Image 1 (cartoon, rainbow, N blue to C red):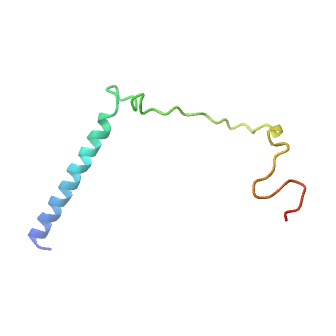
Image 2 (cartoon, one colour):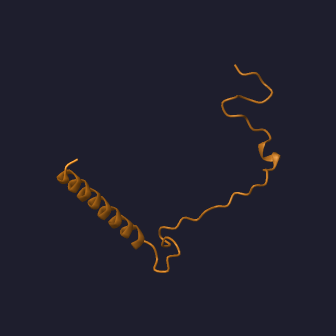
Image 3 (cartoon, helix red, strand yellow):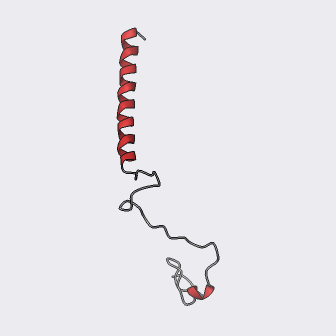
Length: 75
């Protein structure tokens, strides 16, 4: 590889680095000043799903989707 090719590759890498740092600065600008996370407009409320099993009464009289009605043969 010639010196000119190496310099071109270095310039390309530096340009990529400058673009990446610019995107990082923009994404950090959206954080509040205390760094606690996204601003309230961007924040999504998460719902905790418990690890405990569901009550089996929830599934009584339900059909298995795609499998047909329980206790019957599929067509």
